[in-house]
Image (cartoon, rainbow, N blue to C red; front, side):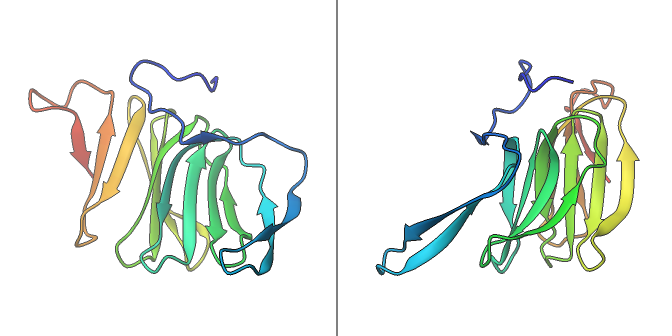
Length: 157
């Protein structure tokens, strides 16, 4: 798969230059304190979501799924189970799980307490959006698969 976006593909959130290493630089905070900033090599990012308490971000893109600690800016997890570009990510309302979706048709739920895959569903075509319900018991999945019926292409897993 290439990183070019098809007509139905989401636009990247931002293009992060791929580097062989991380880069750390000093930066000034609004309060004038010096803080080290780390630039991570994450490829092209297509979606970003924060966990409920704001202490971590999940990023999905051309190089997989990353979970980053927002306080330390350290990488907590990197999941590479998708064969295609990760197009959408979301945290569960309780912050215990993440869902990711990709152009390879996979929707994967990740257990954040264990840092591993909990559930995987293979759709017959690309998956471009996923979102948890506010109650956390349903995930809506949007796919290009056009056999879902006349009301659109949203499926619940």
